[in-house]
Image 1: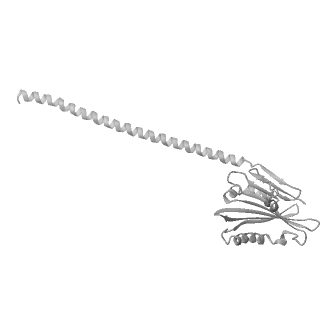
Image 2: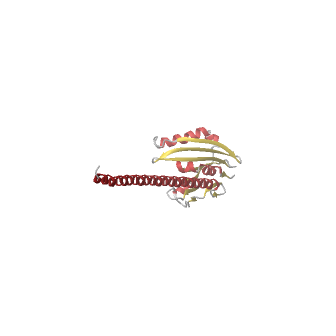
Image 3: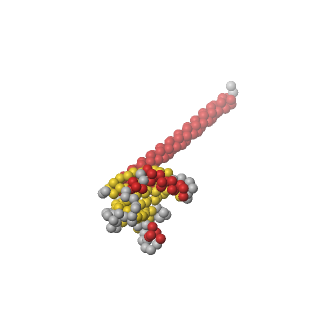
Length: 243
């Protein structure tokens, strides 16, 4: 080989090595960049997962706190009382309406309505019918509780020509201080809204033979009634006729 060819081969060898070294360095940098990106992605995922778990834990604690608060919270109540009757255990979010000389004053002994916004249609009313003679001597003279409950539901459906779709929920009879009470609960449609009617009937017969039938009615939209059923049942239990 000529001296010139030998020198050219000698110069070419370092250049090839430098190119190989450059390629190795570029590949190493690429791998490092990929590893860094992968590490960053993993870190972000771990952070997001940790944040999600923290939020879920906070939500669970908040829900437990609300449940515990609801369990210990007691609704304040009041009573409406006259010499003839007492409507007791009325939740404080109801208010008594001054009926004055209105037509409602001739119909109801008392009228209470839910004073919360948009719920004035939820009411508690007490009405009475008196027969000076020849009236019923006991609730049984009106009919068994099964018969009375069925008549109430049938009456609602007849008045609305079936649109009310009234259905009986539950009924029970009880006696307190020698007074009989019928408790009847049914539901019906009113303008497309399902409402619950809770009726408590009681009969008072005085020494002169006059009989007075009292009807305590709680009417609420089904959602509110179901949420506060125990409170509404307490209103029925708190109803008392004085002799």
